[in-house]
Image (cartoon, rainbow, N blue to C red; front, side):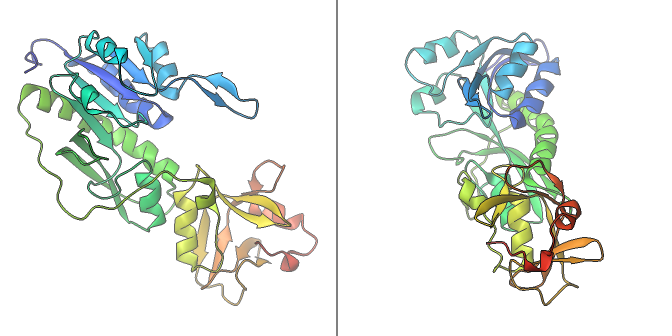
Length: 316
C-alpha cells in the first residue's frame, strides 16, 4: 500500500502522448496531493509536410513543466528498471498509444490507472469518442479503470457522463472530456493507492472502437442525412471528412441536417438563399466550411459563389 496521501504526495508516473493527454497531465501536476516523478511518452515522430521530427504533445508539455521525460514506443526490457527507479507507486495512463505487457503491468505496486474516453465496456479501443459520434450516440463519457492484459477490459474505478451538443465534433468532445476527466483521474489514483476505492468488473455488452483511417473520413452521399452528419462530426478534425470533386479530394467541416430541403440528388450541390446544400439518401445537409484541394479552408458559401454553376457540381 502507498503512503498516506494526506501526509505526503502520492508519487506517480504519468503516461500519455497526444494533445488530449495534456490537460490531465497539467491538472495532476498542479494537484498538491500528487507528485509526478516522471512522464512516459512515445518517441519523437515526423510531423507536417516536411516530416520534421518532433516530440509528442505530452513530451513537449512535460519538458515545459520541468518533469523528467522517458520516451519509448514499447515498455519492455531495461525500460522496466527505469520505470521502477522513478520511485512511483502507481501510474496514470491517458492515450499513451501502446498496449502494456504483463511485466510492465507489474512494475508499480498499485498498478496503472487508465483514463479512457468512453463508458466502458462501450467503445473499447483507440477511437472511442470518434466511433461513438459516428454511431450517433447522444451521451458520451469517461471511465477510469485498472489496466490488465486485455484491450480496455480491466475493472472500473470511476466514471462520468456528458451529453453530446449539436455543435460538437470529436475534437470538441475529446477536449471537454480531457478536462472533465482530470479530477476523476486524480481521485481514482488517490482512492486506489490508499485502498479506499475497490475497482469493480466491467458490466454490459462491449463495442469496439478501432483506430480510424483516412478512408473512414470519406462521405457516402447515398446514406441518410443524419448518418452523413454523424460521420462528419466523428472524424473531425482527425482524420478529417472528405469527398471527391473532379477526381480530387475535397475536405469538409461540420455539416448540418436540413430536413426542410428535399429533392436534391445524392452528392449534388445546390445554392439556396445564401446557403449551400448537398443531397443525400434522404433530405439534404448544409455545408459550413470546406477546403478544396490545394486551397485553404473557407466558408462553403464563398466556395459556392466562386463556382459558375453549382447545380452542375456533384461530389463523388
